[in-house]
Length: 237
Ligand SMILES: C[S@@+](CC[C@H](N)C(=O)[O-])C[C@H]1O[C@@H](n2cnc3c(N)ncnc32)[C@H](O)[C@@H]1O
Image 1 (cartoon, protein in one colour):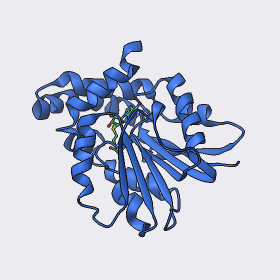
Image 2 (spheres, rainbow, N blue to C red):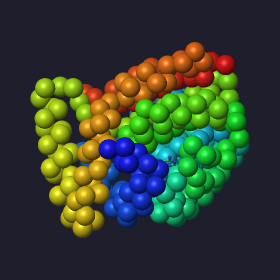
Image 3 (cartoon, rainbow, N blue to C red):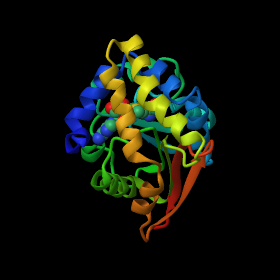
């Protein structure tokens, strides 16, 4: 179990998934992924001229929502360690001609972004592949990146608590998604892993606990009966 949180393992998983990720992400979130990203970003009012860091950016799926209010002074720094996802993010950048987007092919835990350079940190669906120790390191990193009063909003898919939804959700996650993974990718194993990560992750309550620290004001957010969850917060000092 320990090895599934090894950076090399996760990086390879997303390198392998990159060609089918867009389709599969849509399907694995029951078509809700776009809406959840929008809601996650909308938790924060991003003013014009601000610097936003999008951690675990993938192919830049959150950019559209982040850049909605941007102007020529705004900056978006997008980071991911999968070179295949980053290749696609670089292609995606062409769609945002007037935006100032810097793409970094780096591990979040060894990144080159200067301290206190971000007004906002966003992350879409990048939490479940971290264990507790890594989530604590992520909290440190977000603390380092944010300016005082800077804000963050993070989201991931979650297992709902409802007695009705939970078994249906787990059946879909563990049985149906691997079949769809085989159809789209020729490999059910890769998408089976998403089920393993999501079931172990549960929801963002644990992330909330880990992010509760003296210089963060942080709250838990549930989306659509807990099928996704996240945290939003502010760095106080
Ligand atoms: C599920 S995808 C999410 C992509 C995108 N943010 C979205 O909204 O769909 C998770 C991404 O996190 C990246 N990732 C996982 N661990 C990372 C780490 N330690 N450093 C940088 N990127 C990481 C993976 O390569 C993958 O592209």
